[in-house]
Amino acid sequence: MGLTIAVLNPKGGSGKSTLATNLARALQHARRSVLVVDLDPQGTTLDWKNQEPEGTGLPPVVQILDAKTLGDLDQLAAGFEFVVMDGSAKVERLTGAAVRAADLVLIPVRPSPADLWGVADLVAAVHRSATPAAFVISQQVAGTIMAAEMTEALVDYDLPVLDGRTSQRQAYAHAMARGLAVLDYEPGGKAAAEVQAITDEVLEALAVLPHATS
Image (cartoon, rainbow, N blue to C red):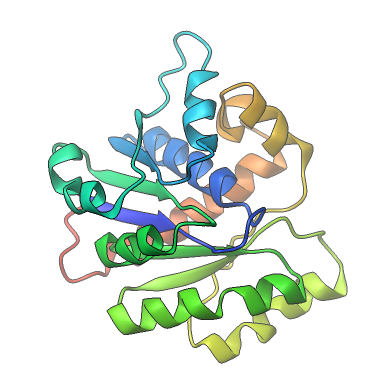
């Protein structure tokens, strides 16, 4: 099995599925083989795959809803260079298993106090497992004071914050509804540029891991 990226946040609406689906597709655009694992009982990522237009070629998506099956991920993901896990906001045991299975945890957080406070337990789990992790600021309103201050506010959690961010753009919702990523929906758009910037940083972070092979 290749490298596993877990997109996790215990708070609903933080942008996990948006980040996971677009990151997975961007890795495909970079000519990497990718498996997407949907850990959410709501199945948002699975629904996205089911809306895929014929001939698009989105990465395969499997749904895993128990920690035991997730423990056998190496068998399910054999032959893939990357696994991208879209986490659940509700299943604490599954989130812990995802942290332990991951080579890198991405934590999308909206620039709001509620999102800031809500990640404390997840960050503690990341530190206990010593899994590399980083915050990704999501759904920012560009130019606002809170968006500018969010990086500073996250310092106390002792995890890096990616420079790449997602903003509140209709392209994300429109692409998701059509079973596409923003790189397919608006390849030259601002949302696609945001996803590409995040993907480039993720690949750089993974490249320096001791066991990285990609």
